Image (cartoon, rainbow, N blue to C red; front, side, top):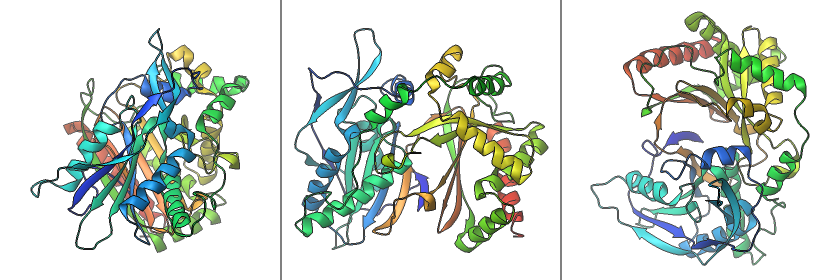
Length: 435
């Protein structure tokens, strides 16, 4: 299971088809509860490159009609995939229930001189925009010659997170089997509540405790009222630049197991050791603590484990002590900061103050997800190609090892400084197991 982007993903040559559902908002339906992150994301306007995707092959290949029927059942199962965004009379973003029609396959020209992934990128940039109706697509890459197709499930980020993509892939595989065994679609799957219910529950919570609000203010004020910035200069990023994507395999499966054993011996999880290494690097190279946006999930209640939506919100992590125990505490604190409605907390800062140079670190341990990908092959998490003015790091941990992916702006200073920072983190992680 790898994390890549559409310009680097592995796809065979072949025919590209997508399943298109006509959709329209229900005119008399009341708007649903909009989450803070949905409003922020969609409020930036309609644009390409706001999607995320997963590609895979089924262990037991299925015909296109089987896949289409199964996908229709999966869409019907997850409420957020039957919603669309628009604006009210005052221009504010709202999310509304939609009626989806019958899906139809559309073939997208893929001449031999063009890479399949280039065609796929155009399809997803066009069909998975924030205000598309609907803003999700299922695509098939059909290589021909009897080879089974690669399936791509993509959606605008406002409807999914990385966990959700794996849920959708699992559900599709299960429903294909249900069809073959003459069971009701999804009969073997757990119930899945709608993401709008989660947003409504979150909005109904009482305000965050004073200590949480104070700690948020301390971290933001340390950056002059901004979200955390990358500790080294990135050059001129007043305007977004073309992205540089750096993908590294930090550990293989056996090495990552040794890394986890080292963490356990210290009484912490693997993420704490990774934060320890990044803290040392930030102190050594930037003469400041590790301070970064830190996405955390809100699926703490198991009832949401099989639901699809944007269950990720932003916290911040600050770590000035590289000891594993101190870093474990920093991670725990960050999770706490992201466990309360952010609208009231960030309101004094004009919402989430995403400024040029912002630094974010994400950790996803797929081994901790309750979704077993054993029925799928060749899984790739795929992001869009975007322009950027900040630095985003993803760590992906699974049975294959630990992988690091970083996106940063294409400037000479960022190439030099982010590259050196990543080199130091990479080597620091390797040193923890004596490699």
